[in-house]
Amino acid sequence: MPQQNYLDELTPAFTSLLAIKEASRCLLCHDAPCSQACPAQTDPGKFIRSIYFRNFKGAAETIRENNALGAVCARVCPTEKLCQSGCTRAGVDAPIDIGRLQRFVTDFEQQTGMEIYQPGTKTLGKVAIIGAGPAGLQASVTLTNQGYDVTIYEKEAHPGGWLRKRYSAIPVTAISAGCRDRPY
Image (cartoon, rainbow, N blue to C red; front, top):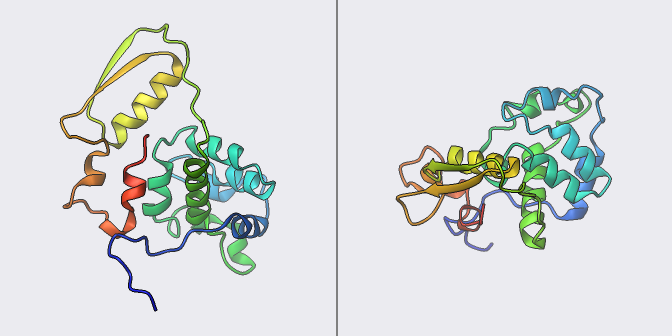
């Protein structure tokens, strides 16, 4: 058995075939309880449907619509207590593994170099954001997409804020260095 590096992620990622297979278990609920239970309003029902139809770019667009840190959320969000707890499939056998599906999509996006964000024309003025933590990064993406010229001021060498701190409540094994170092 290979030794586990403490920086390796503990749960293996889905391959595209396994992701499609997992998404095909979805009952495609009209008013998806999983989407209603997502506090980030990421709409798992919609991105799972996109995966099922092999539309990985559409799935990535759904995740990124309001979540610049979708790759981080896929790894640290307690999906079993949130969106998966509302999954109708749980009444049949087991809920859809929403966190791993989201991880598959955000990893696929990164590995294939997908361009999801379409910044608007910078016509609405300039905005300064203090701090490149999760909130600052999300604000910068939202404002850039709306057409603002955004500048982020960060005292640290890299973005991420508390995601990079050793004293963070998130265990170091939950977010790999490759995920933390993505160009958000």
